[in-house]
Length: 243
Image (cartoon, rainbow, N blue to C red; front, side):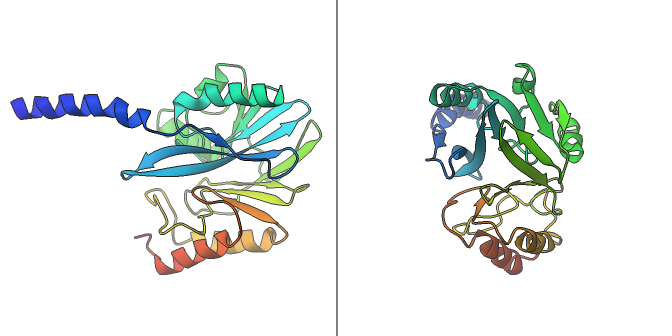
């Protein structure tokens, strides 16, 4: 009993220290005039990973595609964006239901910021007792905001049953989210909610439909360069059961 109490006290002591060690987000130099990638960090399986997300500068404000992995950085990112671009965050689009994508949408909902997710993502969020989005994503239809344009597309199941990608036609950039693994990834990552059997078909559809993309952004790790889609397919071929 005494040992159990000691272990509990030790875990309570170490937990905030571990959280404190998570690095702050990093905003990368713009990949296009109004399109930015920012990286936030989290720990999975005892290892630190970076999560790649994007934001788009429009004349009406900033559109965020996925939220920072640590909830504690939500406000800091918004403040940094406002200071850097003199524009507020006006909308958040989630590419699936996990913490490094949709996170806790109630933070933005409570601030009157529009949040967007697919009906499937909202279904999963609700099932997990989490806040759902204020608006449903119109999959495959162009969103035109403040002189900028993007399309949220569902190509099929893969990393999750609800993973979507975001296409920026003017820039020929595709935000692949966690559907796409980095060329530096050594495995498929978390596959507890994946459809590994369908994932290769979804990737082939991505390759065909967005062959004109000059940059495809993977969900985690190194995003620069090419070969992310091909490497994802290689990983799937080597791990057909997601092991």
